[in-house]
Length: 357
Image (cartoon, rainbow, N blue to C red):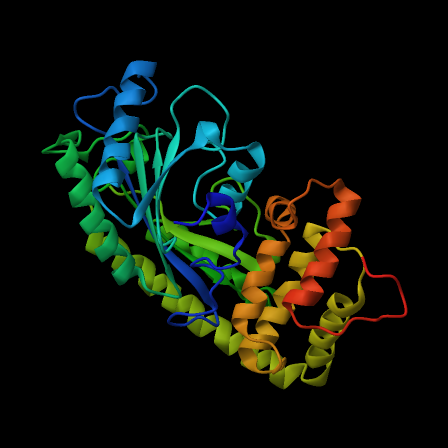
């Protein structure tokens, strides 16, 4: 199995593959299950010994199931933990350097990550590229059964699975889709997502709860799981996602008709900045890449594929950029590295009249 750092340096991940159903709008689908073992106190009440027992259950499970890697987060550098957050494998809370025996169970294909001793003892996550909640649920459900067989879960016949946060009680399921909505923003159509709260859905930024909607990315997810079946939650979310897909595609067509050459010019100007800029901040990179992704999806930027643009988003992340380069860098150094790496990733021309960053 490759070294963890080598794995993290690769640009591939379920949300940067540029593949999957409805990939022009939906980058990825995720199913997350919150679980706690019946025999152990919940994380907010556990001591080091109980946290260690949970840690060992998952460590033993990985030893018995080829295809999974057990990662002791206390042995990882702050930079590695940061990149794990940037790749959506763990949460910012899970990345904390403390004595809670935090760990990560990661599948060989990066499609499954299980956070150990986070807010709940287990946070099972399954990712699929594009709009594919059904496949993600099937895989999550199978793994959930396997982990539950290792040690029974805390479960109540009336309330369902017991969790640290009351909003997760019931199925313990949080389903989400990561969508790219540049045309809806440009046409004022984002008011559509304001209605989602009435459907029991939440709208968040790229990195989930508490994050901002940068680069026209939004995470749509269910808010509660009590009193609803997994199938009902997934069906509601998929219906909302399909409404967004239809609306975003229509908005792109409307923009093409109303702005035409002006829109094409804006997309190609962003392309040109990426081609020749010598320094780019994370915020600048996200702003530039959003129109490029729409251009790649609609054919306006025929030389670029969605996979090229989606993988470029990782280069906007400071941690991934430093890990890939194998060296720390201050903000100015990262901005120079980012500009250089984006030119390479997007296969853009380099102006050799100036010194390479």
